[in-house]
Each structure stands twice: as structure tokens, then as C-alpha cells.
Length: 103
Image (cartoon, rainbow, N blue to C red; front, side):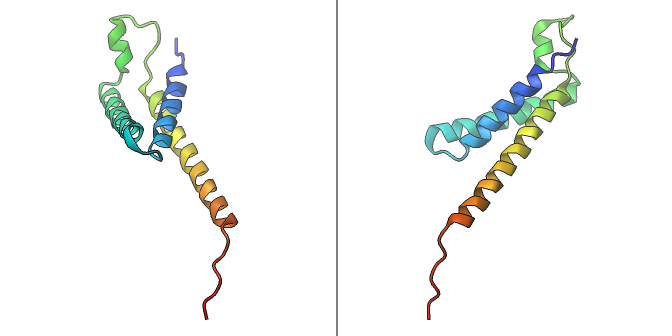
């Protein structure tokens, strides 16, 4: 049985970490490390053709591991984050008062 929840969790976690890169201090560093570890985890899973969670369950996992669901979740979060960040940037530019012309 394929659950699919791990892809949704991966999307939420990725989005949280991407948003955390806009912060400062320890939270930003933690989010940067977490994103690096997520990339490493997904790379290992794609290389092995199985999720790391299936190794923890042993020989007969209760769910069929689908590492591509993790990648799909992370990519979806990246697209959503980029689109909302660009929309916010355009909104800021539209509401910013224009500078008077010097002359």
C-alpha cells in the first residue's frame, strides 16, 4: 500500500525551511542545514531506489516506498515558495512610492 503522506510532509518541511532562509540567526542556519540534509536524503533514496524509512521497518515494510513522492513534494514546495516570493516582490514594488525626479 502506498500512503503518499510522506510527500506532503516533505513539501511542508521544505517550504518551512525555505521560508526560514529569510530569517536571521540560528533559525536561518538550522533551515540551511535541514535543506542540505533533505537533498542528501533524497539523493540517497533515488540512488537506492527505496526510502530510508523502509530500511528502518525491515524486510516487509507496511507501505511501498516511493522516493519520487519525496522529490515531488520538495519540488512542489520550491515552486510554491518561488511563486509566492515573486508575487510578494511585485506587490512591494507596486506599492513603493516613486522617487521624485531630480533636476
